[in-house]
Amino acid sequence: MSGLVETLTASGGPERAGFLNDIVENLWPNICVAGATMTKQIVEPMFAAMLPAPLNSLHFEKIDLGHEPLKLGNVDVHKAENGAIKLDVDVEWDSKCDIELNGTMVPKIGIEHVKLRGRLSILLGPLTNVIPLIGAAQVAFVNAPYLKFDYTDAAHIANVGFIDSCIRKIVQSIMASMAVLPNRFLVKLDASNDWFKTYQHPVGVLRLTVESGSHLGEDKEGKSFLKKLVHDVPDCFVKVLVSAEQEWRTKTVKNSRHPEWNETHDFIISDHDQQIELDVDDDDTASDDDIGVAAITVKKLLLNGGRQELSLSHKEQPSEGKVKLSAKFFRFVPEASSLNSQEPGTHGLLTVLIASALGISGQRQELKPSVAVSWGANKFSTAVKTDGPGADVQNPSFDQAFRVPLQAGSLADAAPVRITLMNGTTETGSVDVKLEDVLASPDLTLQKDFAIDGGNGAVVRAAVVIRGTQLLE
Image 1 (cartoon, rainbow, N blue to C red):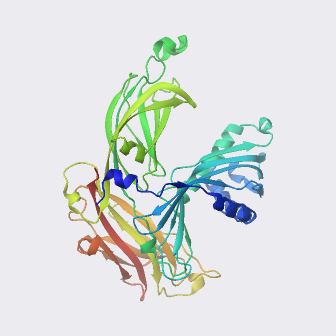
Image 2 (tube, helix red, strand yellow):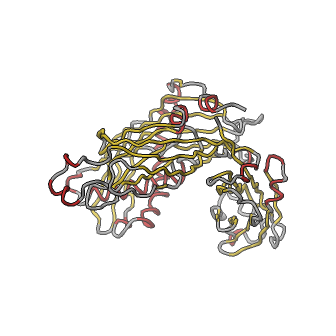
Image 3 (cartoon, rainbow, N blue to C red):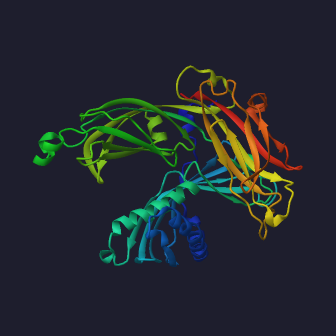
């Protein structure tokens, strides 16, 4: 089994992307049409659901993505752990656009320039011996991409800053839920593609400790007279974000420019190039809340021996502030002994893969199948499928994954995983999967067609997977 350095540096090395840019350039007119259609179909309902009135009435009147195609660079191709081809590539788009938004009691809003920058991870697999040789493509940004809009005649749009913040928040939220790790956008290249072979499991757990900070906030001598009267030293806390994983924050250390937190949190890692983003804030609203931000990739932190002091920037300018981090990395392994640990933290992972349902009975136009998964307090649900051209609503594919971090002792006397076939909001039937059966299965993976009790012969093709952890040094 390879060590930490070998794992982190296993790569084919960067390559040029000339031919890929040629392909994108030739496809750009088609990409623009498809992109405009997807943007309207996906973003408009989110405006209606998430924006306050009257902005929730915003809709697209025109979407022209311009003539400047995406630029690709710094390509890195290598094999993923599941045998798929992994292609990592930098993406940059800097284009003049013509996008118009309108709404009730809202002035017409024009977007004339869009900038987007990030790194894409493309998984091509599973590999097969049948044309097209690749079962599916999965696309995701490794980290949330940079996104900026320039507005037409922005000086004459009231509250343009607020409107811009709302629009970008919606777009970034959609991108994060669809295509920022751990979420991947799936494109089937083979209709019979096997979801169990396609899914890329997370690589492990990063146990991150935010140790301390130094020189945070303004020195007393540098403060204005008013700030000296209101607040001398900051009450500091740190927010930590890794891609689209849930944000975590430390406690607040009051009245200190040199706080010590020494708090630890576990993050599930899908790619070693994911960024650890730190946002240090002052908990006292009487002063400037934002103290500074910093970022480092998981790979760089671990290759530096798992310790790093990061310099903070404030409003894109360097500051004196610094934050010390330390980390350990635990890879996921098909072995459950780590779950017997007495230490706090994440010691394993329970993953439920829902591939499809087969043999659902009923009138096609009345069927709205989905699959609900529950384990204790954890509840998940697939997308709801409906009848339509090219859709087989009686044998729908779902190709979704749900996961639960496991703490020490999580599996002792644990409830079974319940898989429930739904029709709309009505339960058709269910099946309970005992974790003892999963632990007794090869590689701690129980994969089968589960017969649904009360489902009139319907089955759900699913897999329940348990992984333990192992410290990688």
